[in-house]
Length: 144
Image (cartoon, rainbow, N blue to C red; front, side):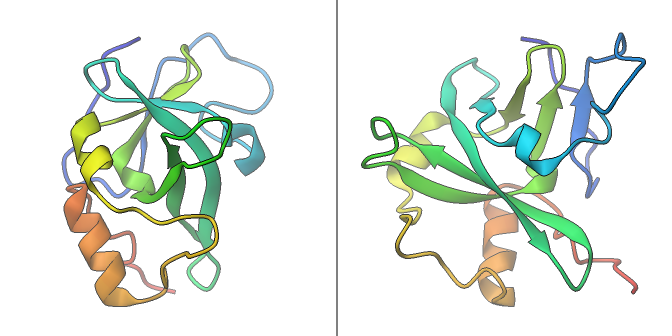
């Protein structure tokens, strides 16, 4: 896996690799469903799970979160986490995402399950999630 390039304070996810891709979509402009089921690793190379969904803030026209599926077997018993889009780095060469979080953080965090999603439009909840991952809230600096 490539070493991710970090951009402190950026509200955009970072992309590494993919320089050889000169035709077609990606890695800088991709369909949301092409990113679903991509594996997510931490900086230690441990697999954290897979991207289950991409959440769009429709009024702002921005990607808000990736929903990370962690644990479980074949989708049974897994926990879901809303990960701020800006907290992820796309490794285009390895076709995976990198998230700067220890596996123990996800093991100890309650997350949510497929039948009980949090109110993602709640500003307090959203601020807490961004703070937890050390990410700048995507709505800061937003002007319609």
